[in-house]
Amino acid sequence: MPNPIPGNLLTTAMAVMPHTDVDRALQMALSLDVPFWPQLPNYSYYEDMYVQAAEHFPGIVLDLEKRSLRFSMDKFAEELETTLMHFDEPEMFDISETYSAVYHRFLAMDLADRPAIRGQLEGPISFGFNILDQDERPILFDDTVRPFMLDFMARRINVQLARLRKLNPNAFMFVDEPGLQFLFSAMAGYGDLKAKGDLDQFFAQVERPRGIHLCGNPDWDFLLNLDLEVLSLDVYTNAEVFASYAKSIGKFLDRGGVIVWGIVPTGFEAFSQEEIPTLIQRLETIWTTLWGKGIDREQLISQGMISPATCCLINPDKERTVERAFAAVNQMAAALREKYLH
Image 1 (cartoon, rainbow, N blue to C red):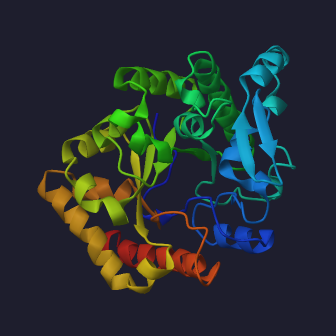
Image 2: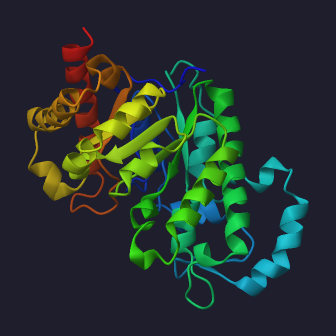
């Protein structure tokens, strides 16, 4: 089955944005070739990516005033049976209007003419690392909670994807997994083999097209060999390391995978030091390295997209740098398409 995710250096971006104006955030998301629904934690704590993923999850203790998200094993035990009784109901796994006004605004739009659209959900590894129980222990390490969490998050992704597909048949999802960079470290407290087995089990439950976004520097061999259709990464920061994995990159592309090259920084300081030509040169340096290692030139271009390098919630000029970065992504992609696709 061909990958429905468009390549050819079209543009998209990560969902977390600093905006407090929903209309302005949506306008920016729609300015890219492949739009998405923004996540706006500065607008409301409900819009935080971890909070959105936690909706309906048994055992969650949410404090909006303190902006804290915790987990109680006692509460989990109390709520689990009721949750399991509703496991066949899509409403259990969708994001409500309370948890994202932006998502429901996006669902009301006519997006059929776009080459694709995208949604996202925090992935189980990052969610499990960041949500702590009553003993200050990540719930990822709990052998009772973890299998349920993997199943629950897979269902959440599938329900959102089904809703997005009604708007556009080429809809796809990012599973946001910043925690993957810590997954195989000695400090993680979670063994390599167990982690790999859990992620394989998780993605086997997620409907295609399956994708991961992360900004860190994980085990790239492991990540590129997962059964995914799209990988979105911060190549601005991780260029040299990523380019050294040519063999795994080649296999990923041969399977039809699409790489989203996150090349435009969204932080004020980094962005102010770059211009479109320097960013293009950065990206072409990586591509040239990979071509020199046997990666097919045409394949790399046709199975690539362009995006910002990372999300950014805090800049001295608030939303302005992020908006300028989105504009730079479009300008850069247009220049690269003119060079490589005409």
